Length: 329
Image 1 (tube, rainbow, N blue to C red):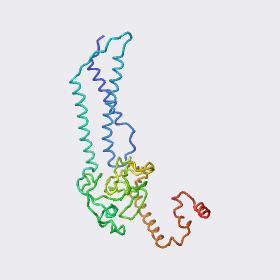
Image 2: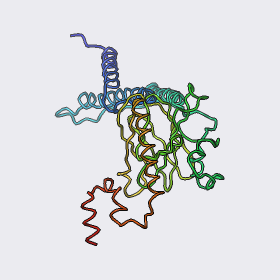
Image 3: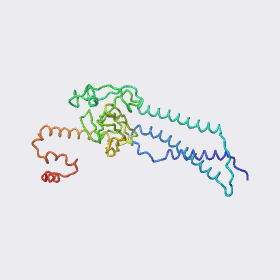
Image 4: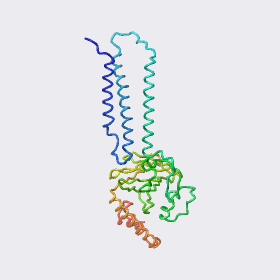
C-alpha cells in the first residue's frame, strides 16, 4: 500500500483546522446581545482574535496528541530517543507567523478604536456643571442652577471615547453628566435638570457621557454596548455612543473601588423616542413637585415618621412599619 505523503496530510489538516476555527469564531455565543452602534466593531475584532486563538489551539494541541501517539515508547524499546538538532526554517516560520499576526491585529485594533471615536485629538465641550464639580475648577462655586450649566460650556482636552470620524464636528444629541461614588452612579441631565440613579436614553441618539468620580477610580461598563470608560477623580473622561436596540441593560463598575464594589450596579434603559419624552416630562414634573414641597415645608415642623414617609418605598418598608418603629423608640 502506497503511503500518503506528509504534505498531503498537512494540507488536509490545515483545511480542517481553518474550517473549524472560522465556524467557531463566527458562531460562538460568548458575547451578550449587541445594543450599540459600536458593538459590531468590537465584536468583529473579537471574532477575528477568537478565530486565530481556536486555530492556534487546535494546531498546538493536535500536534501534541499526534506526537504522543507517533513517538510513544513501544514495549521492549529501551533505546534512546532520536537526537534532534535545531531547524532554522521551522524556527523562522513559527517566529514570523505570530509576528505578522500581532502586527495585523494591532493595525486592525487601531482602526476599530478610531472608528469608535477613540482618536479625537481635539478638546470636547463640557457642561459648566460638569466642570464645576471638578476639584480646582475656576467655575466651582460660581454656578447656582442647572440653567447656567447648559449655557456656559468649557473646552478641555478629554480622555475616552469621543466623536467618531462621522460625527467629529457635530454636537451630541444628549449630554449626561455621570458621577461615580462609593457605591453608586448618579446621572444628571443638564438640559432638563433631572437627576436619576439610572441612565435613560432614546434609541438612535448620539449620547455623550461626561464622567467623573467623587472619591476613587470607578469604571463605567455596559457589556451590551461593548464600551467601558474609567471615571477618575479630578480628571474628566468621556464616553460617546449610539444605542441601537430598546431595552434594559446592566451597568457595572469594572474597577475595584472598595468593599462593596460588587454591588455598584445600575442599568441603562434605552427608550423609543416617544417613551423617552414621556419619561423626561414625568420626571421633570415629579422633581419640580418635590422641590416645591421642600421649599414649602419646614422639616423642623414634621415628626420623624412624617419626614421619612416619602422615602419608605426606597427603604423597603411600609408606612405602618415605620410608624411602629418610631413609636417604639
